[in-house]
Length: 305
Image 1: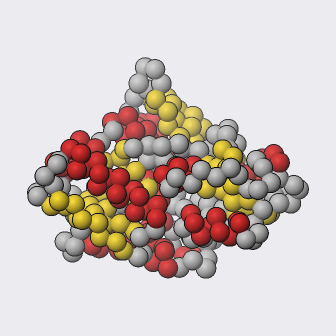
Image 2 (image 1 turned 45 degrees about the vertical axis):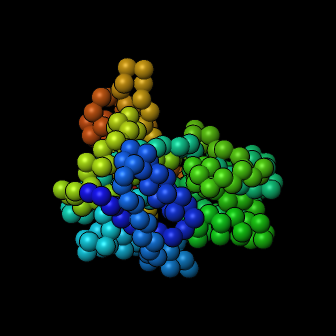
């Protein structure tokens, strides 16, 4: 291939991610021509309701996938935490790479999580974040917040919220070095599967596969596959408070931590596994969660939604 077309959403963060992959491709293939194809997805348009009520994270990729199926684009770039755990069979993820800070951060003029006054109003688009923060601070008033990073920060700055929760990686990639950002410890808020990592999606047997090969980060790939294995094993989507983090040990094993929470954060089930193979360690952790009562917790959340 002499040219490559990248399908991307048009938010500033999505464009940064696509431009990063473009630059990496050009670094490895100097003669390649790369074009960005900007698109607006239903997830970008439907901002009035929480994602769990309007179709989940798949709303952010349907138009990009249609562009690849109709040969209007060759690849699509995603933040891995925003990608459904199971893709349609026509598509593959040949590249999972470039992991940044996996943590969530609190953005607030009032300080960190422990500094917020009783009953503070906190905005988060994620039930995973809401449940874990309520487990730590049951007094907080959590509500949904939608829109891109800039829109959410604008709502905070206008006084609509006392604090909001965002992914550290997104702020870092956009160069938003605000003084009112406080990282939330992993022990308080375990990240979403794939958080901080970028992924490249394409159709199976795409001619772009050979071009993409140098971009793969094998260590990140193993950890993210284990994390996504937890989501897949639990049948989880963005409507479910599921978290997972894989970390490589000195012996190159994957240490996988995961949890399932109810919507209130009053019940949190945790599990840990250790192993070489991502799928095997994910299955071990999923079995632990089911043995601890994950099905009951998941069913209660699905009933609410």
